[in-house]
Image (cartoon, rainbow, N blue to C red; front, side, top):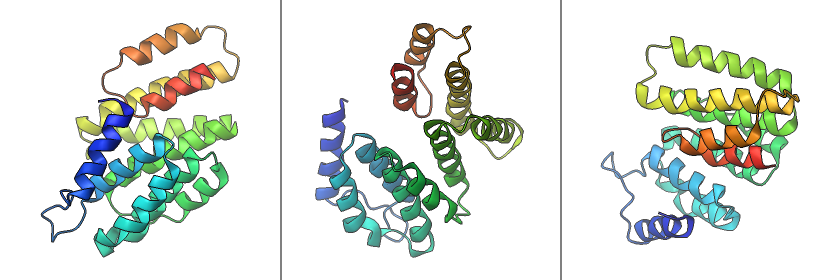
Length: 192
């Protein structure tokens, strides 16, 4: 589906109240975050804010606060308010294992955007260690996240003026990837 079509599908699902999970009628957290992220990544900022206002109350109260903070961090990141995005991430105390992936990826992207190369390299090494050593990380999370770390490392080398990295070759490699986290963002960074 294309960008506009995907947003239409999300709007159709929401308007027809088809988004509620079976878990006590709450909006499933992973679906909530996926919808919100797609809306924000497509630069539909007003729609993203409206989504939060309209659907936050449908989340399980036990996870609501942290999930909203993660969404606010995502929105601020997409709006290029990197300091605000970072502040939102610092206030998340989530114990949900899958949130750790989203938080770390967003943190690494913030470091990159702010030009904090050393912090990005340190965070990247820690995240790669986490992905390879933690037995609780399933292949469904490990593979796309390792793809992200692989290409972020190359982007950082590019940013440090490493002549051995050829942007066009790197771009083509990422385009060919079928299962990678933040593919669109990686491609945007090569082009900029």
